[in-house]
Length: 418
Ligand code: S3P
Image (cartoon, rainbow, N blue to C red; front, side, top):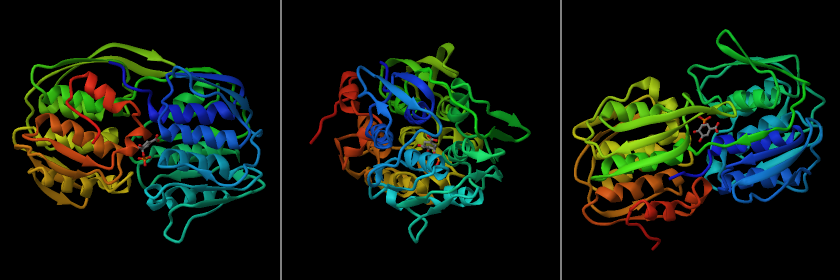
């Protein structure tokens, strides 16, 4: 099977394509609602973007200074990536904007991006709790900064790189541990220099991006549900095609392999600057481990499905150093702990993670907390459950994996909408 296009790369392709000169074609783009929110925001700022047709869309780039003031607010729905990256891009514009989101996005921390933007000379207001809406006032210009990220975040790094396009001088960002580097790779694909200097990644303002053709690989974060499904189901063998295997994203594969999973990474190649491979996965017996802390950032979006794998493993799996999970589409630590306990799994909760003792999964009712990845993770827990698991509030699965139910059914998962 081939799962839908990578969400992180799809957002970036639309953002950079919109401010490039000339046409950009994006193949394999994700048509999840998160990405569609980004498309809609740029359309509102005067960019001509075709509807995704058979996974391809084209963008008539308006150039770095060609965006026009939108009518009304830009609604970024459930998407933290869209809001944080666009905050960086819009901070340097000659017009003001207001960014809003749904209930979940409206509770997510934004000062991590507005603080460094303010240091660059931007004027961005958050709500009183440091959450959306964001009100971005026009400024005459931004200044480059050297910034050390206090929290590892590719969204903040990317926001500052995008603001750096509009800044005088050099903007350099140092990260405590490596985070996904799709923005840096894609900037280079658009012909924009972005260089590693010491611990940091640096960009100079006032250059130009040239429209290009982008091939978006299948999203490893979506493939993750099927990688774990094929591992925990009996007698299964699954081949996942054209999956993005950027080393800043492959923590889950390393962790599962350490637990005993049989995952072969085949036909490695590079497509548009991104590593891609086919993955072959077979059923395997898993053993609980202490998850290496250095893998956490590299597996950050896959922790919910990793917790399901841990519930199916022999022994205890301990996951620490993952406090960031409390600031995702939901508080993923508390929501996973509640959900796992609700289906009979013994879990200890910590401020920065949890310990899960593998055991028998009962059926039961699980709250997804409106979080797409938690909903999909518990769907896969159903494979091993003694009776059925009912998961509430699954609508947001469409943010990242619109055909999830059909894909799961086609791969043999007994699943239906209630
Ligand atoms: C993303 C970065 C990560 C990740 C999110 C997508 C991105 O967030 O969890 O789903 O596309 O840059 P943080 O930057 O908050 O770690």
